[in-house]
Image (cartoon, rainbow, N blue to C red; front, side, top):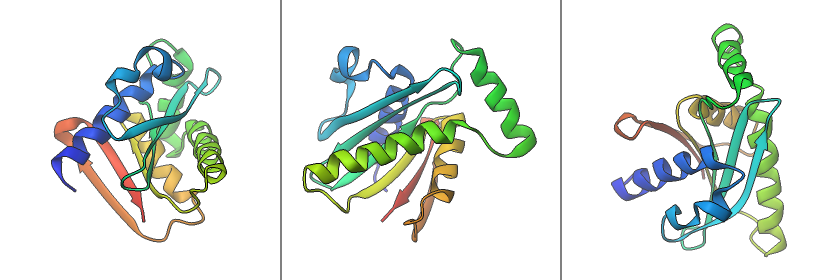
Amino acid sequence: MDNKLKHDLATLSGLTYEAPNVGTKFSVRIPPGYTLIGERTSIPLGSNAASFYNNSTNTLVTGSAGNNVKNPIDLLQNIGVVFTEWTGQVYTSMALRDESLATLAQAGITKPNIIYTGHSQGGVTSQQLVLQDPNFWVLKLGLYETLGGNYVVRT
């Protein structure tokens, strides 16, 4: 994975913290080549997620935010991961992924590559998304600690 893609994924991961305001307040920060497809926030699950599409690489990026200090429920989700190795935040990102795939399908894009990315707790969510993806057959897991995130690629 080249450094530009790592930087783009870190930027997209960072933007997920701003959902549901990525498109209205932060669209200038979306890396060139990517288009915002959807955003989702769940107060009861303490999660934020956003998805982006890169037409030149036919890639859907589903990003999950990490700790959200504005939502105390997020802290409970983090504690849950420690004891159960699971977070309910995956359901927010899973629903967003499915909505994004449906949006792309309506535009005639039916088999995009998928990258799950997230920072901090969002990295855990990204890895759990892979386990819930019935079409995931090639797994590449990378950690780019200098940028503070994780990514998982479905090809």
